[in-house]
Image 1 (cartoon, rainbow, N blue to C red):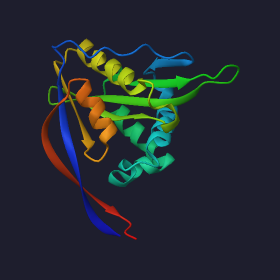
Image 2: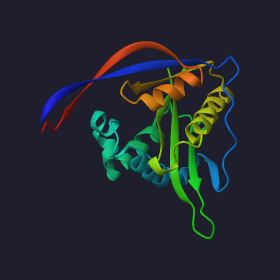
Image 3: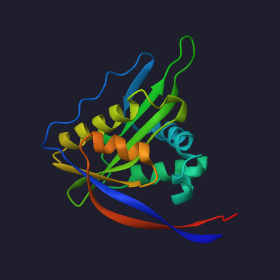
Length: 184
């Protein structure tokens, strides 16, 4: 084990400006607004989205199913939790039950909307689903009266950085996150 520092961008979006237009939701997908019985589905989508990704090194709880469930419980119990900015994405193949494949959660922090763990499972990426989830979260922050939002992203996650820039997020600063990781 050794201490590693991960470079991350804090990215910010002005919610008083027009939002980047989200693509239409593809067939067989559905967006579900937050409700109290959805923590397990959000946790599963979070786990499936992050378990094999770099961010599971940065935040080890993302690499464990029980860690994702505990994280969801912690997020939703906070007084700063914003249900209006929290969405679940399900995929419903024809003739099969729906499966959670994406998630985003929002918090209110010091007058800002703060995105927590936007994730879409690998097999469902490339269809604009991250854009749809982020747009819904931004609309939720607007509904509760917030005029700006932010997130942090590991700089090596180039696809996510591109998505956020395309949506109008501006890089505000660089931060470093220390994490203990297994070295080969």
